[in-house]
Picture 1: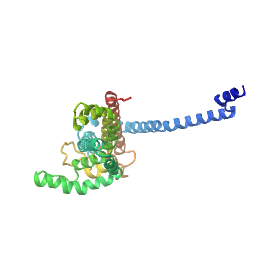
Picture 2: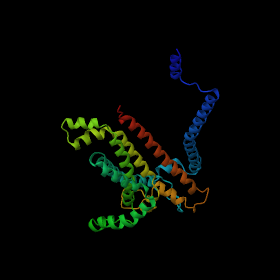
Picture 3: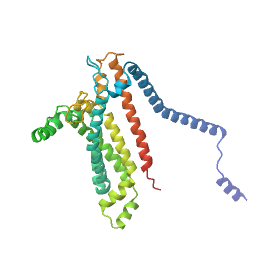
Picture 4: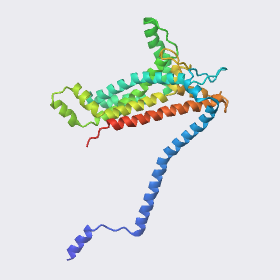
Length: 320
């Protein structure tokens, strides 16, 4: 009987004293509210930014109509004859972003495929950190690299000497190339992690059917990791749209409605930097134009995020 009672006491869980239970519940509540506060910081910050953009841009649109802002093809707010057509800035932004996407997205994806499917563990461990070093280089360095190397030593010899086409010192092509180089580490790192997480059973099934490695990569692994690859593409494009210093130094500050990548253009972020240098009087129409451009940039980013969520929901793959 004594042994049975001892065994029963040993199996029954110990009951904590009431004061310890109360202290544990209080600690749980503190941690819960602390975590809630940390999560609320991002929401409150976003709401504050949106409120500032709407409030300040409303003062701009009281003086400049929506028709002029969205239909005029000239942007000269700092000239004597002022025009406030947003299309030159939009054209410059999308031109640089398109070039960056052409350069960075395929290169980053191919690098990810090589590291995930072809490189050995030792080579992969060497290539991935080396590639990610590019992400730590300051963007202003990329801008000067485009201005002092890509334009004079790559673009001018190629287009002017061989093709006879004039290349301006500040041009959208050089800016797009360096921004494309900047987003390669993001695409390569995220895509490589997604490709590496695809179950090996899918690869082995492809090989069992007699498929080659290239076929397995293109027909099995890449479609299985499509949602993650698309996510890396969207993040890279968002980074290219929001890039500032490299584009300001390489593309110039000439708002021009053109699709010629060899000419100088101005992006929305470059205009914001240019007007924010301190020479613009506070409360002037030029000052409020910063917020008008910023809210358009915010709307483009928001639309891209919504589209990204829809695409990811459509192509998301889940493996148990």
